[in-house]
Amino acid sequence: MERKNAWKNYDEKELEALEALSGRYRAFLDNGKTERECAKQAMALAEKNGYTSLEDAIRAGKRLNPGDKVYFVCMGKSIMLFHLGRQPLESGINIVGAHIDSPRIDIKQNPFYEDTDLVYADTHYYGGIKKYQWVARALALHGVIAKKDGSLVEIVIGEDESDPVLCVSDLLIHLAQEQMAKKAGEVITGEGLDIILGGRPLAGEEKEPVKALMLSILKERYGIEEEDMLSAELEAVPAGKARDLGLDRSMILGYGHDDRVCAYAELEAMLLLPAVPEYTCCCLLADKEEIGSVGATGMRAHYFENAVAELVNLTCDRYSELTVRRALKNSRMLSCDVSAGYDPLYASAFEKKNAALLGRGVCYNKFTGSRGKSGSNDANAEFIGKLRRIMDDNGITWQTAELGKVDVGGGGTIAYICALYGMEVIDSGVPVLSMHAPQEIISKADLYEAVKAYAAFMKEAK
Ligand code: MN
Ligand code: MN
Image (cartoon, helix red, strand yellow):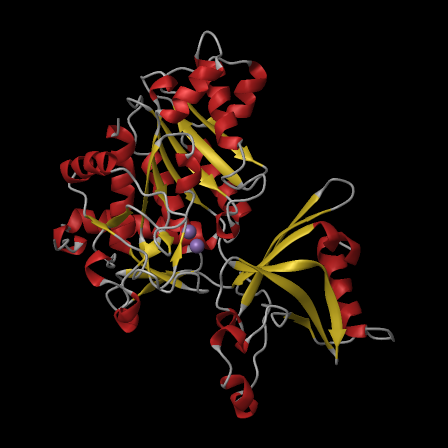
């Protein structure tokens, strides 16, 4: 059962559309290196395309009708777009869900210290990373600092060509005999991921003069004190823009494809829906997937369910809890998250005929999990049968995927959480090489097929 390479199908017009999409996606990556920045971009795109605030509608008690488009942002870190369909909510929603948080290095709450004329920020990494990949490379700092007066200072340092960048140092190879003999997981420790922030003393300062100069710069540029770090969310991420990869420009190398490539594909798919879709469609962009979908903005929180309840309240003559439950239970969902692309350099980690190949289209994982599918959603065969029909009818290049060989590892997504409502859910995504590395690789063809697939799913799933 060989799957076709998507590139073989494209004519000039499609190649042009694919390039244009890739350009828009690269811009989304460049301007979205944190969950907050991605949520903000999604909101701007929604507003530009006629979506209005669900919260405003709730406040005004505004009746919502088929064709109406609303969005809801949860604490600035996750966002949902709803495009109301002809059918009542009770008959279910066609959902595409992804996550917009990515692995990174977070700054601790009491981060700054000076050691031997250098000033550092202490960090705690976020998500699963190979720590040795994050040293000796340019890092940028993105995030917010909440002040006691309630104001929020937004920070981006290291993205503009004229900005300074930050870095975690590594030991020189000349003296690394002992380090090189260590296991890869122990080469760089978590507490060893401290970021260099400066190396020049403040004139006239006796006590920690290098730290003092760095603090004076923070004070001058952003009006913040050291104490303000107690209420900050600062993320160190790879500095610089996403780039076309390969002499044929067929791929994109960039930070955060997991899972912003699916998030962006969903957003573009939402814009391809007819004025009034048959069923209500939803694009759900969650936070905290990389640390277990926890917290108020993670998928395990109730914001999605609450938003559906609000929609029921604003579309039905009489609100009923049962209608909300039916809307959730009767829904159909693609849990859109990247999958491991088959990598010839690491062939032994994959079972090739069940692995996703770069360029062979959007992929569907019946199951994820590890050690005997543990933690997996394991989609229903009946649902997959319907999906096959939608994909093939719409000429979409697609493939099935398994996250590596049995018992070599594994992973999960938000699929199992949404499945708790009793809806049909399957994992779907774009194959990625070097997943969770500071720079990951995708094929433009797979992004292009994902957009088409997600639009077709939302239009036709029932
Ligand atoms: Mn992911
Ligand atoms: Mn991930």
